[in-house]
Amino acid sequence: MSEFDFDLFVIGAGSGGVRASRIAASHGARVAVAEEYRVGGTCVIRGCVPKKLLVYGAHFAEDLKDARKFGWDVPDCKFDWNRLRDNVLAEVD
Figure 1 (cartoon, rainbow, N blue to C red):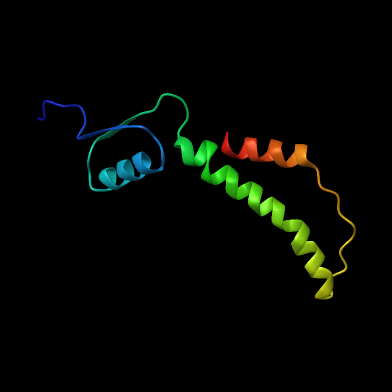
Figure 2 (cartoon, rainbow, N blue to C red):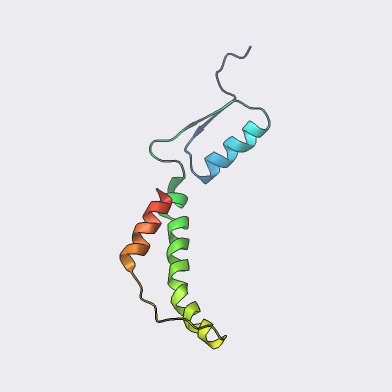
């Protein structure tokens, strides 16, 4: 019997920490992860993911305008910043 409770102890549940944990566990390692606040890390919670959601949201105005040129009957649309912001925050939460 091993003198340790875990084969791998990961500090930080960001993208890299979660991936390392999953790979090790898939090979039979006993893994523990320590995270101070929320799983996901800076990229998922504050960086890459929120940025991508905001960029996708920004493109729709252009896409809807272009759709008319391709025969789509697109009604006039209105942008609601508060709804986009709230939905992005809910997604990363």
